[in-house]
Length: 248
Image 1 (tube, rainbow, N blue to C red):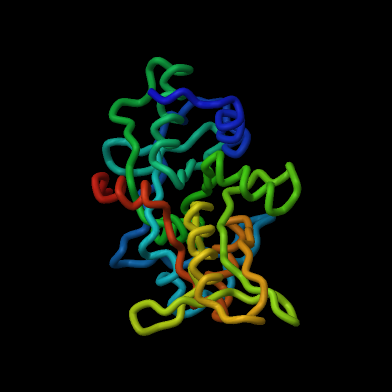
Image 2: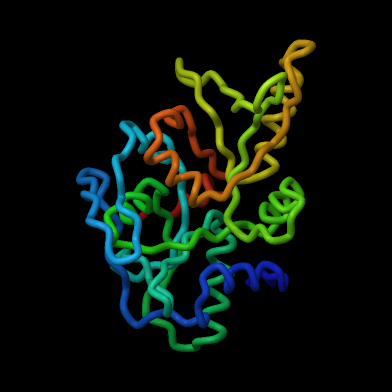
């Protein structure tokens, strides 16, 4: 079992806002790949789902995430009825170990399951699931450094940008005969991409830098705003490798 630092443990527990015990019942299964869930009307105090941008699923379709699940594959909910969605498999395993330490008799068959960010977003849009994205500790530290603020506690997403004479703009990359904007879930990947862009740009092309945003708000905007249709979420290498071994 990995030993978690105090910061990682506090981040997980604070973001989930739970008492570190699993709820006695599982949540609903994730939305099907073949049958996208219809958006439900907004409840009291909730924002109406709004119009979805065409093709938004392409933004997240190749991004694996990890949840605690029961034998039926439905995500297990914590005491506040929120499912923890981990961006890194190691953090999901570490949190499961923490729960087992605090509750020696967790529900039978609990495991770490790989699913897609697309399924998570479909379930969220349908009102079937409330989630908290759990970030990797080092990525939160990088986001705080970029923002020069210790108050940043969200799961971050990193996008390479260029600043010229006007406002900063996203850097596009040619992939499969289309121009896309890569949004990285792991900061070192974003740094490597920024280095490649700097090496390829000509004199006077502007200043290349890595920007950061909160993942939840970024995904919600991408789901609604057609102008963000070029974005492609890029998971970490560890997440891609683990997802190949853990299929939902």
